Amino acid sequence: MPLSLPPAANARVITVAAKRCRLEFAGGERVEAITRGKLLAEGLVVGDLVRAEQYREDWAVEEVLPRKNEFVREGLRHERQVLFANADRVLILASLSEPQTKYAAIDRFLVAALIGNIPPLLVLTKTDLDPEKNLQNEVRDLYEAFDVPVFPVSNVSGEGIENVAAVLGDGITALVGNSGVGKTSLLNRLIPGLFLRVREVSSWSGKGTHTTSAALLVRWSDSAAVVDTPGMKSFVPFGITLESLADLFPDIVRHAADCRFRNCRHLAEPGCAVNAAAERGDLAPSRLRSYHRLMEGLR
Image (cartoon, rainbow, N blue to C red; front, side, top):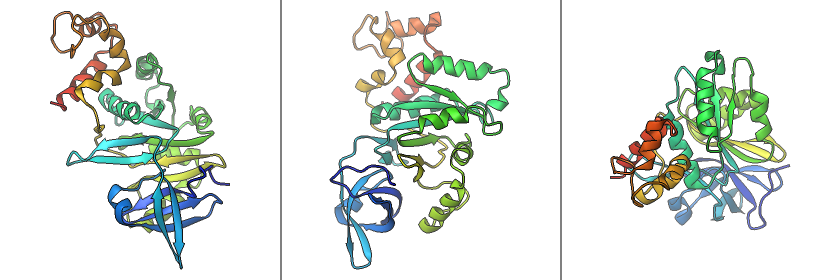
């Protein structure tokens, strides 16, 4: 039985390659379809809800319904790139070692989730490489302080896998992260046989078969699915403005209310409560550095 669809849609996009896509219909049937004209120009992404029609043997997407949310990054030419849409939550994967994910990378994924109106959760992978849990506890304390749920896991020992599985129980969950964080290994633990399905879709789309090269929606249960996305070497959220940046850092916002100047940018202004909080240890310096790096990119 497929995930529920609104009355106006009869299919959901499960993967896209150039002018073609794969759809899952309300009855569970999956077909290949083409995208034409204006819809092709506007772009179609995994998770989109669509109305499709059949012409002889071929299916075509005729209408894309408005998205309730979307996860967007900035492309190499500073263009807007939507990775997926209509997700109920996004799991941000960060590895504790080999490689250690930098706080700045975690913050950028969090910012994109907040801009896109998608509830974020943080999954810390490779806990077996942090046996004393020093880094794990540091990261957990930092992000749980502003209400981001944190799930430590090990794909080697299986630690924490059941906790992650529990949050996938309904709706659509997307996974994002830098290359090498263990996302594919986690998905293969959660969804037996996933690699075979990824290979099938990769072969269809003409992409590589050993690493995920395009987003893919995979059924988790009758009422749930996950969106696998490519591992990214770098990630820059799209759509940040100088006016909105501070609001995307809730821990900074709390201290900013006490700044002397209402338009304080928390650089070197006199009476800046944010800088004072960082000096006292009430605000993590890594968070303030992430804020400043994103601000620098907006100038």
